[in-house]
Image (cartoon, rainbow, N blue to C red; front, side, top):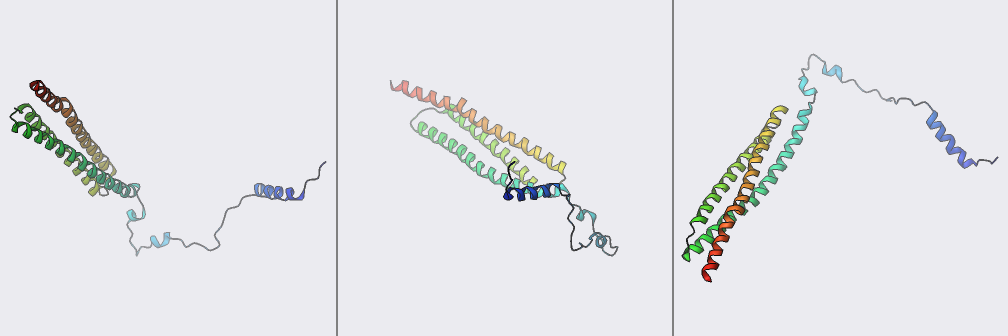
Length: 194
C-alpha cells in the first residue's frame, strides 16, 4: 500500500469538513431596530399607498424613457422621408416646367403631380396623428392605469400602420403611375427625333 503524502491529506480533510459540517444560519451581531412600530404610531399618519410600491409605478418611468427614444427616432426618420417626398415632388415640378417651356403637353404628368402631392399631404397628416398619440402617451404615461396605457399603445400602433401604408402607397404610385408616364413621354421624344 502506498503512503499518501501529507500535502494531499490536508486538502482532503478540509474539503470533507466543509461539506460534511452542518450549515448554520448567520445572525446579526448588532440588533436591527424594528421599523414597524414607528409606522404604526397613531401620531404619525402615513398613506399606505406610499409604503407599497406598485409594479406599474416602476415600469411607467421606464416606459417613459422608451417613448422618448421612440419619438426622437421617429422625428429623425420623418425628416428623411419628408425631404425625399418633397424632393420627388420638386423634381417632377421642374421636369414639367422644363418640358412645357419647350412646348410639350404635360397634362398627364401634371395630374400625377397633383395626386402625388395629395398623397404626401395625407402622409404628413397621418404622421402628425401618430406623433400626437405618442406625445399623449409620453405626457400621461404615469397618470394612466396599465390598461389605459395598453389601449393608447394599441391606438398608436394603428396610427403607425396608417403611416406605413401611406409610405407604401407613395412608392407604389411612383413606380406604377408616375414613372411609366415619364418613360412614355421620353419614348415619344425619341420617336419624334427619328
